[in-house]
Image (cartoon, rainbow, N blue to C red; front, side, top):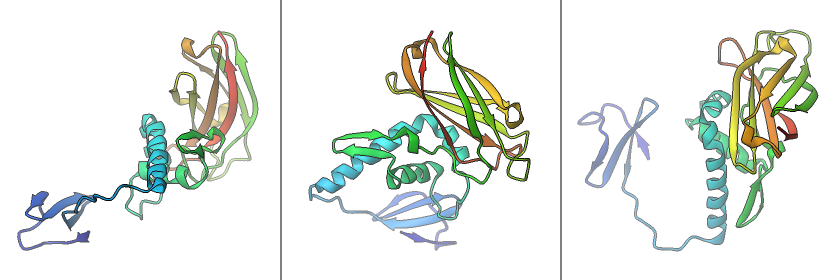
Length: 216
């Protein structure tokens, strides 16, 4: 694929003959049509596609979180979702052997950034499908502000469903109570948290809070 600027007819989008023009992130690209391969994929390629499909399918419901959490380091030209999927593929988050791949929830990272994470002091399930969380922090700094917004993610493997909580607390609160859907009751739930600064441009790296049992 080649980049171009002010070509003979200017930029274009779509197919002209054997050439395809496109525009991505303000840059014009041009490439030739690819020839479809008749060669069957190797088992290694099949396995990689399965791992990619699992990572992409699992992260897609959290696209808004991923857009925020992987917004830094745009220099490589990839999308935030591509960077998130790449991280999960390269860092042992996808586990198991083909075709039975799974997710190591403890290794999952929904955000990567310079803000300081907290220490989890307590996670206690309460009746009524609630979870009480308490945390502690270092002293305030440029990377640890009292007004950093605390966001939370919960995932129920049995329901294959995420629940997200944005701006439900700030760092200085030191605690929060999360209410889960009633159909999460009597099941295990994995939880994570991260911070976003007041500008919305800085985040902390995701903190895995652990696996809890929710009861009604």
